[in-house]
Length: 258
Image 1: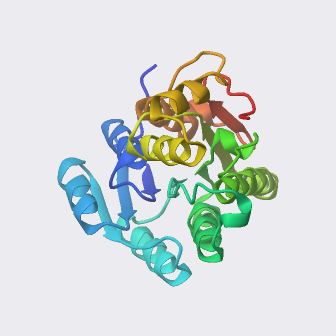
Image 2: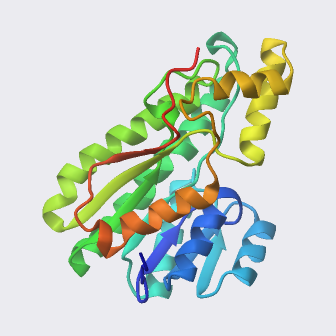
C-alpha cells in the first residue's frame, strides 16, 4: 500500500535518534513536513541535516515551559498541526522497588507520561480548530504486563494506555483520533543497556538475560524500529482514519515477564 502524507504537518518528540529518528525518516519519505525535538543538540542537528522537510528545536520534554515553547514554535513554523507523535521516553532505573531513588521515579514519570500531557493539551485546540487530527502515544508492552525491577517505566506506560483510551473517548467528537503503539523488545542501544543493567542486577550474563527475555515472546524475536515507524505511518494516514482508542501491540505476542 502506498501512503501519501503530502501536506500533513507532524510534530515528533525525541526524534534525534533511536525509534524517533526512524519514525521521522519514514514520515518524511511519505511526504510529511516535520517539526522535531530532542534533548541533545548534536543528535537533533544530525537528524535535521539528514531528514528532508524537517525543522526542530532542542528541549527537555519533562519541562512544561519548554514543551509550551516547542508547541508554539512548531505550530507557527508548520502553519498548523495534523499529527502529534509522543515518542519521548527514558528507560528509568533498573532496581528493586525499595532501591529506587525518588528523583529517578519522578524523572521517569515526567518524561514518559507527563510530557505527553504537556504536548497534547497544546495540540488539541489547534486540531479542533482545523477540524481534526491524529495523536499517537508511544507506550510499551510493559504497560500491560509485569516488568520486574522496572517499576517507574512500567507504571508510566500503563498510565499512557489509560490516557490514550480516555482522550480517544473525549476527543472523538472533535474528529481527533488517539492511539498508542506498544512495542515489545526493540532492537537498539537502549534495550541493550537495559539487558546489561538487569543482567548485572540478577548476577547473570547479558546473553542469558536476553534469552530469558525472549522466552516470554511467542515469536521469540525482537522488533525493529522500522516496523514501529511503518505502523505509525499507517495509523496516521487516511487508511487508519477510523482507528482510535487502540493499544496497538507490536511485540511478537509478549507475555508476562517473571
